[in-house]
Image (tube, rainbow, N blue to C red):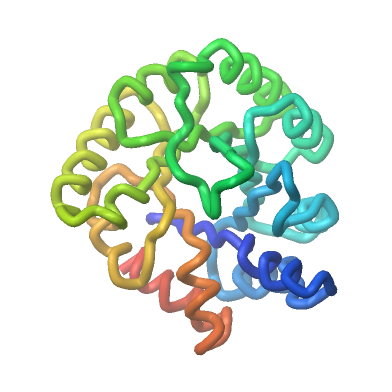
Length: 235
């Protein structure tokens, strides 16, 4: 069954806008779990613009499904992850000026560094996923790092004027990755309108969705927002 990971970053974004304590992303994670999601995703950024270290530590203690920590491939973040030991780490590119993640990790350009990070994390029994473009050369590079998993960047599909071409590109990438023995997730920019098209691609095991769920929750509540997305993901 296709699994759903709920990204709670934007709950923290609202909290940080006022510098207070509400809304609490930890509470959001627990509600999402009770609604039936399969994992909780959060991105601890270098500039700490939303999720804070306190949040991640509490999530590690309280999340009962799977905690997927998104992070940049830096020494400081690797040290934090090794100390925290989440269930999974997803390595993502990160740029201070970006509003949200702008593209996939260029594994080809930093293969040696990423391979070393993957090894360090796996020694602590942390599953490692690489957030990459649906590109065959990047998948080949990901295989050489010994990462167990990749997450396909769906942003180009979401923003494309010709989404059918991007869907075909994603399907080809997923098919190739499966033959390499990789587990496959997908995410970025997926909504209640377009997720079904990604669900229809065989071989994807997990979808990670945040902004659309949190936005919908403003109107229907987080429990209902998660359940509605689960109906699409599992339907």
